Length: 153
Image (tube, rainbow, N blue to C red; front, side, top):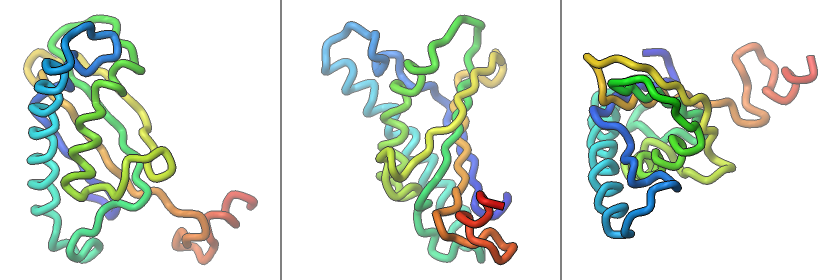
């Protein structure tokens, strides 16, 4: 594991009931979201507990400005809408905040990066969450230059 990165695998896909296109009763959406949120929460807590003792993250404070890349593994090929997949993952983001992996899921604090879809009958259903810490403005990148100065060079 590289410093400032983490991978979490959840053996479920985000619920279709959380898609903006789902025409269902609110209680069905709520129930499906709760189940998925719980699954992501427990995987996040497990990952955090396993990495808590690493020297680069003592006590494991949450990621301050993370980039979250998602990979959804489906059992069959079908055209998938990226916007709907983002919306379906909202309970997963809420679980990551609840588990204290990320500080906040606001637009200023989080970069929801790439969304990738894979087809693999053996591994599906699976959600892979890759988290990496992004440099904050003015933060050194190890070369003695701040991230602001690096952009100008």
